[in-house]
Structures are given as structure tokens and as C-alpha cells.
Length: 251
Length: 163
Image (cartoon, one colour):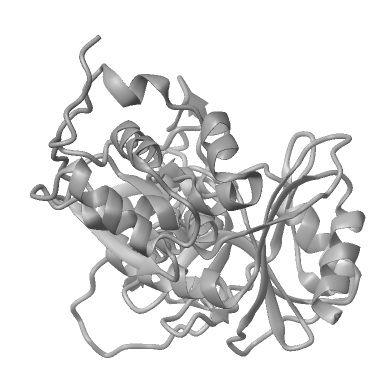
């Protein structure tokens, strides 16, 4: 993908919003072209200096504050990448690392993934992702370390893992365990071990490219669910689930 | 009451499907409906043995030979019924005969509780979500209920769409 800007100084802050592991490319042909256009002050006071973000010809955002465009750019790049990637498979999941292995927590929006990731970080785990588990063909999971999106009553705040005293992982890791779970007030974490086939379905239900590339998704996720145990249960408080999982992995 | 002849022939849906063996289980992705199914060993055996040529009467002894737990014609009908419910059969089962008297409890009683776990055909199915449904927030034009619109995209939820 390509990004072009209307003024050179817009480039520097933009770079931190690109996905981890991005590399500059000399090719002039791209699959998706983003345009960041800074608003200019008009001599007419009634014209407001809006800045714009486009993806190809589609307007994604319009704002008076140019810095807001970067978050919009990041959100769209992540989503595009997650469904268009050819070598890797993106599953909507939180990922942390513990003793050189990954714990993957797939789940829908508002299922409590971020709360669980945060609890793992507070227990000493390393951070990999709050949004996507990125798998390769060997079943390893790669870091996708965007700041954690923690929802409050009215707004979402984005916190870096260092806030919780945690480090961010850099290397691909084998998966130690997959936890299919969602928060339910008052529930107890009583996990069942799913068969590899059932586990694959659980992962597939959270895979962005599952409809576009079902054969590849089945092959890659089947391998992941075959190599690592898949636990499923509703959960109550995150600390109880975290303690259980860390004990299982430790043993 | 009309009984179903043993010469019934059933054809699993092979067109528009992706099939992948995973240990004893079979994963079937139906591209027409975007549903994914996980067939346990018993259901997978029936799926594999039904080829549109073998009759029910011919499949039963083959099934008995291959199965790890006691099995009989009724379990075959149960598997067929579940394949049909999952949309994985090309032709419909008759609404009379053995399929009308099938129950999991009865099957468990006949083959024994421990063996039932192995013998009873089970099919788990999911509707594979669109990409937009498998993310934490919706982008432009996406559905914003129950997911919010992505914070950075300066979108507003209007009539359940991020605009």
C-alpha cells in the first residue's frame, strides 16, 4: 500500500501509525493508496480548513485537527491488512506471551478480550496484540502491537503496554493455549477442552479473511488448533482465568 | 406407516464445499452458505461412505467394520439426519421410517453411555462472519450496533451505520 501527503512535515508523525514490520518499497504500483491532505487557511473566514483522509477515491475522514487523521489511517490500514494479507492470517484476538509461548484469546467485540490481556500483562506476560493474532503457515503467532484500546463509559483510551509494566514481544512464537471465552457477570471459569475441529471453528468465527480465503483459513487454523489446546468457557473476573491459564501452562 | 427401503441412496454435498480432514474429524466449509461444519468421527465416516452409489444397507456393515464403538443402522440414520440439518446432503431424507424414531438418548442407551460419546454422530456448525463482524470497531459504512465506530475515523453512528 502507499501513502501520500500534501505536505512533507505530515510524514514524520504518520510513520508511528504504520503497522509493525513495515518496509519502504520503491514500486510505484500499490493496491491501496492513502492520501492525507492538510487543510489550508482560506482568505474567506467562512471556509473552515478541513483536513482529509482518502483511501483511493473514498473519503475516510474529514476533520479540523490533522492529527486525528492518523488514528483514522491506522484503523483503516489495520482492517485492510487483516483481510487482504496473503502470507499471514489475522484472527480477531488478544495475544500475550508467557515463557516463550503465546496465549491467544479470540473473541468478538466486547467479549472482554482487552480486560483479559490487561490482566495477563499485570501478571507479568509480554504484550503481543490487543486486536489481532497474526498466524503464519507454521502456526506461529506474530506481534501486532497497537496500544490497548480500553473502553470507558463514554470514550476509549489507548494505553501502551508499558503502562502495565509490560514489554512488547518482537519474535514469532508457537501457541501454548487458545482460550475461547467471554465475560459474563457472576460466571465461573470452568473450561472444557475442545477437539481440534471444534477449536478450528472457534478460531474461524473470528477470522477476517475466512469468507475470502476459506481453504487457506481452514488449513492454517486447523494446524494451530491441532498443535495447541483450545479451552472454552464463559468467565467471571479476569484474575481467576489468568491464574488458571498460567498454572496450566506452567505445569 | 411406510418404511424407508434400505436401498435409499444419499449424496453428500460436494459442490461448493472445501473439505479438510483433521485427525478423526472432518471440517467442511460450504462456500454457498458460508457455514463451516465440524463432523466428529462417526459423522465423518458416514460422509465418506455416502457416495451416491452405496445404499444404506451396504453402508451399515462398512460402518460397523470401521467404527471404534458399536454402531447400527439407527446411528447411520441419525448421522444422515444431522448431515441433512446442516445442509450437507444433496437429497432430502424421507419423512417416515427410521428417521422419525431417532433420539440421542435412545442411541446412548443402545450403545452404552461410554461408547455413545464415540458412536453418536455430532456436527457442530457456525456461520462464518463477514470481515466487518470480526473486528472491534466498524469503519465507514459498517454496522455500528453493537460494535462502535472506530474512534480514530471520526465517524458517527446513524441508523446503525458508521457515517
